[in-house]
Amino acid sequence: MTTLEQAVQITSQLTLAEKVQLLGYLSSSMRLDLELEAYKHMPWEQFLNLTYGNLADDPIERDQPATADMRDDIE
Image (tube, rainbow, N blue to C red; front, side, top):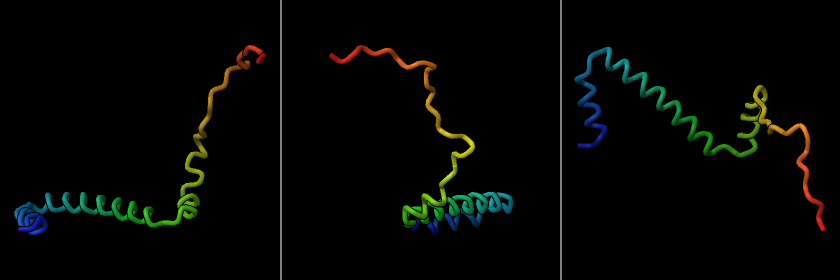
């Protein structure tokens, strides 16, 4: 018996509320899988255009000291 056949057999024993819950899980899982698959086949330029600006409201910053470090002169 295949995994699909086992899933169908088990699903037929579920209550309506459990089937609705399972459908919600499958829907969100499938949506994520489809999005990931689409990103895998997308040209990198298009991916950059879609993700550009994601950190616009929270830019990456490097905390700098108020004064520069004092270093020894190179001899």
